[in-house]
Image: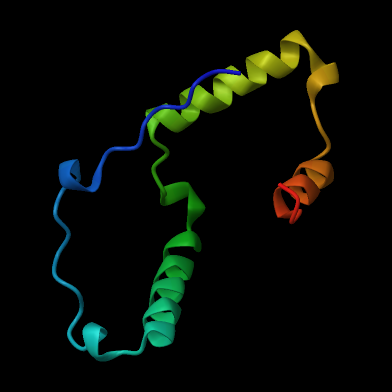
Length: 88
């Protein structure tokens, strides 16, 4: 398995605009709903969401691994079961 690229730390990311007015006054549940709604509005147009080169590189590496030995592949359901198992 190949190593994954490291995420940029928060300190190195560009600063975002301030939170919307009133956001801090919302309960945590309301803040989460706000962010979920915001994400849903972004995800309505998936073709406009940029894919970082590092993500494309990982996908290409994994596809190459699969093509080298397809027998090592696992069914998606099996992977999800393993990830959601309490015995992880």
